Every structure is written in structure tokens, then in C-alpha cells.
Amino acid sequence: MPYALFEDDQKLSKEFPTEEDVWTHADEAGLVDIVDGKTVLEDGYTIQPCQPDNETGIAVPPPAVS
Image 1 (tube, helix red, strand yellow):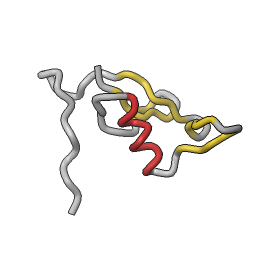
Image 2: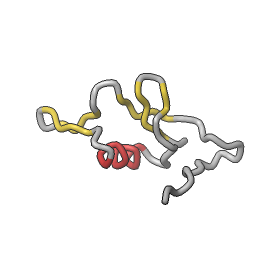
Image 3: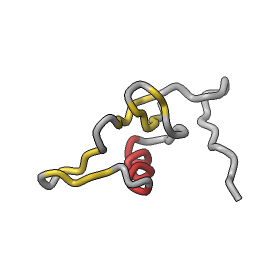
Image 4: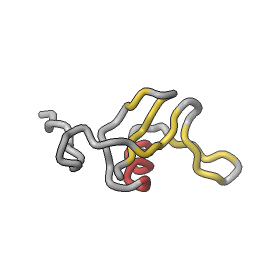
């Protein structure tokens, strides 16, 4: 099952194959902090399992931005 980044209950990112991939994406977006030596997401953000967007069950990446 893929994972995605959520703010409250709204999905913000594409699906990623692993939770670790979402952490990497969140870190690149500046949404990861270190608090008392622990890596955490900024308030309001979570990583949750999600359903794929298409009927084949394969996560589809968004179109490339030029």
C-alpha cells in the first residue's frame, strides 16, 4: 500500500511506495524538524497509508514540471 503526506485529513502529495520515501519528500519540502533529537513533521502534517489514485493499483507520479 502506498503512503502520502497529509495536512489534517487532506492529501498533499502524490503516493510514494514507502513511508521512508514520504519522509524524504517532506524533508526536501522543509516540513521536517528535529525536536529533542527526534525527527518530526511540522504541526498538522502526517504520513498515512493511502489508496492509489488509479484503478490498476499502481501509484501514478504527477506530470513533470518544466
